View 1 (cartoon, rainbow, N blue to C red):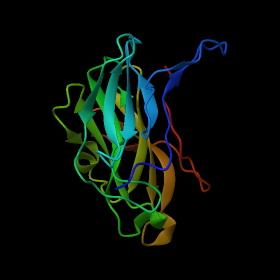
View 2 (cartoon, rainbow, N blue to C red):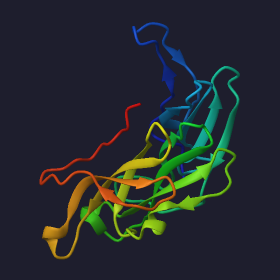
View 3 (cartoon, rainbow, N blue to C red):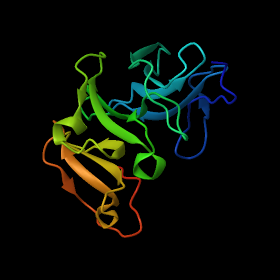
View 4 (cartoon, rainbow, N blue to C red):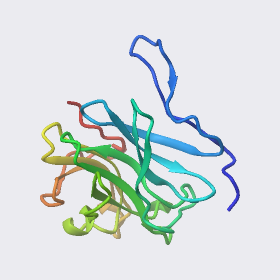
Length: 199
């Protein structure tokens, strides 16, 4: 695979708009989806380059600049809109876990989105858990996971093309941090796509 046609870095900026700082300073790499640790000392983010031609999850020590790969996941599955890999990592409040989503199957399901699962992994890159398999809703496109402030729950979007069609949904759901207790939070005939838990 050739180098990405696009490149992007991760920046930080003060809330007043001052002190814009480039944190990653990379060439021919696409980086995005940053999430701060609760102590403000590190970020996790998704990174794609030609050497590892899929999105992997990386962690950066913001003060020291040290970068390490937390999770790759191998070749993976692509969809028409997204390369293979891992997206939207989010720290747990205690800084011990990261949740993220990745495409796991594509045959045109869910209006062309494919099937995406939400995973949880320890910050040291061990203990990968497929939260969606545990909850037995593994045929949907589920994305943008976000921990509750106490770390007990995860909220996420779910996109599902059902047969019969009236049972389809594009709504926000919640599970507990172990993947159990699935709860549908919205029932919007239009769509509810982008959940985030506010501390």
